[in-house]
Image (cartoon, rainbow, N blue to C red):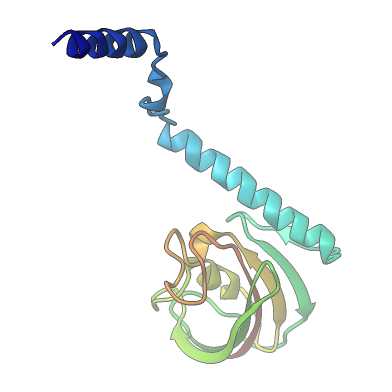
Length: 166
């Protein structure tokens, strides 16, 4: 009984003297809007670093936060929302890994494809080719494509408008 009391006494003293780190249980909350602003600033810096490292002289930021660089001027009809178009695209992540190359026929502005791609194709002329850097929120968004495109990945599209059908 005396040994039990001594062990209990030692246990109480040892646990009473130990410092408790209350910060380990604290959760640091970041305002979701501020978190998104920080992420967008990081992504913009990533895109700008890509532009510098690839020497994309003449690339212009458009009103949607994308960057576009004309490669070949087009001739012919200009694509507008509601037109059926045929286009080709080669897609890359900003680490230069290729995602794929394809040709597709879509109704511009109404088909299920990336918002940034709709906006980039709108206003192009048949035969025109351009390079477009699209931030993640206008490309594959938060989830990516759950396959080859990681979450929140800005993308590079090399697009060519083949034909506009009205």
